[in-house]
Length: 196
Image 1 (cartoon, rainbow, N blue to C red):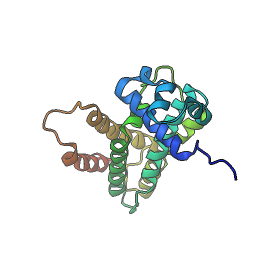
Image 2: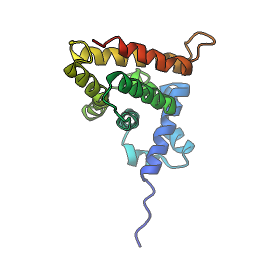
Image 3: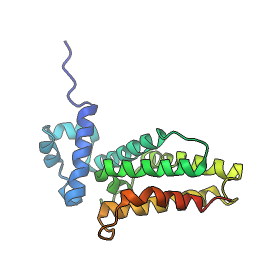
Image 4: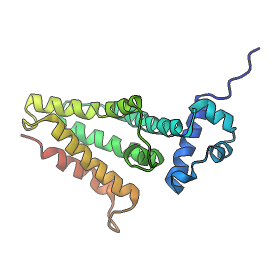
């Protein structure tokens, strides 16, 4: 009978989540492979077996963050109405960030000095913009949105959502400001600004 595989996907995800939590809570210096293994109830051999090295582990964190993010965006049902669809995508963006804040920082900040995603990881990250870009391109082509470069609209919308979510995650919003109450209205107003 073959030996059971102990270095499986469940362990890989457990290690990634814990690594992200360590970096998020205490900075990149807190990410020791020995501590990660101990916190996750496994050996450093398992960490090396699954990821190779510390830089490879950080790259895997980056990819996993965008994989989860992309999966949430892909699940958004599209109606064909650009503003409605962009609001839905914006809501999914926020839900993803709130579900995995420990990955969000690695995805969108320089939380690990010197880290640069490899080409494959960069492709995964860029692909997550496809649903947003698709809605914007269709809206420009159909005349729902102004006749400007879809990339301009896409990056502007992304920057707006990213800014609100980043302020929320960092706790930098004014006292008493409720993102839950304002977020959808703000998304709707922002997307509507591109209507013809």
